[in-house]
Image 1 (cartoon, rainbow, N blue to C red):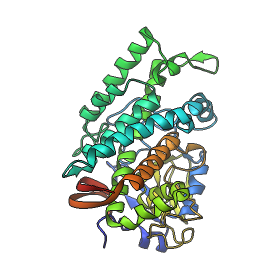
Image 2 (image 1 turned 180 degrees about the vertical axis):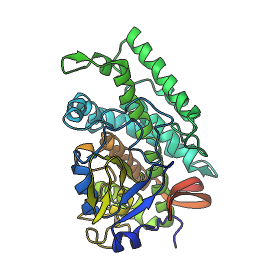
Image 3 (image 1 turned 90 degrees about the vertical axis):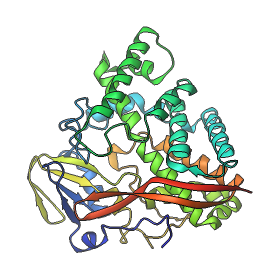
Length: 385
């Protein structure tokens, strides 16, 4: 098996019954595993809600380390649409040529740097730096601020060993509070200032609402982008012919991005809270219990994907759900896609091959399911063309 391979631990349960059960901090979760069921539940916001107690729809639950509601992530329609409309155009800025030019400059610089190194630890030295620097463009703040975020390490929302330990999350909360206060005193053209000047239902957003958007922006796109970048580097190390394929057929780069995020599914799943007794996969779920929409399992559903456990860079039909589904599709998807598209283009242009020197896999445990989501560390040698 290739080192970059991500086996599908959900296949048997998906085929046999369509769901799995896990316990999360004494708040059990029914994992929905089939693509059609995941999409159906994601669309049914009245029965499976996002606007529950802040932190409860996240798996593992964050109710013990967070009180601020993430916006619009933890809000249901119709208010979800109202909040989303405030920021939709801002999060589509990665489609602008000037934004793309700046992003390409950032990624070219980091790729040029690693090409001269004897060894690079991809998670900390490449993916984290790339993600943090790109975030300065999304927030429209000075590039230098990325050094602060890099210093936090890859996990900004929970301690690595204890989901109930909120000390690390408090670093992020205190930082955002400080930045909001700075924007109130000295408004500019950054996202903080834009949110503070915005109105919803004829009123200005509160500081708590602004904080909710910013927490989501920082936390929601961090581990996911880092996982996507790191897994892609590992894949190209195992498959140098894919770099040649992209170089010779640049028109498939967009499809390659979608295929890599389908296969690697940087976020395993996301929860919902059940509002009334219901049934999924012929399985009863009680009101006030939780389900999770298992993106990683749905993306390997053989009823929707031909050869689902293979990476097909030019896959033509690809209804993956790595960026969510229905009204809660990821706001940061445009930014993430542009990062990956730019990275793939530059790697194909400049890199001949990548050699894996050492690695430590990151294995998530969900009851009986053990899923490789990426790497705690992976050291490689980039070889220039």
